[in-house]
Figure 1 (spheres, rainbow, N blue to C red):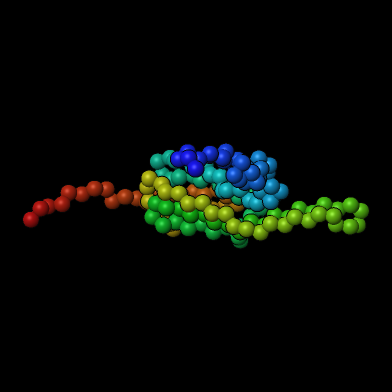
Figure 2 (cartoon, one colour):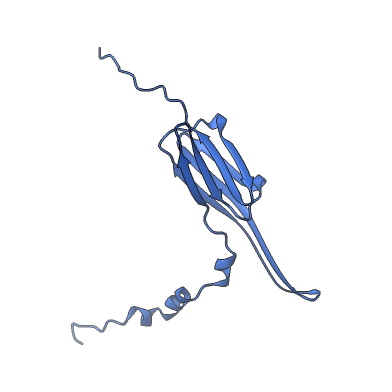
Length: 139
């Protein structure tokens, strides 16, 4: 036996693993995507636009803790294909999606406004009035 050993190519060692990456799965189309967000800022507040297709307003939860905002939702997606009066294929997905992010300023959680329209959640997050900086006297 020699000190050198033959190194098998990685795809020879795990052929099925790489075949799965090459072709998309049917389940990947049914699963909900991540929540995509757009955040804009002005002097008084942040405006957030979050895409949550398939979620109803009672299934969405928004929490604000200081400058951290968290959005989570239960998503239900159903697809049914019929041929005549028989159901040939029915794909149903139930799951949850979540997204959290930090902002530069703390949010006044009592004045937050949230609206859902056509799968898009719009948040208005007012900046908390800061007390400013103050000098501390050294004793």
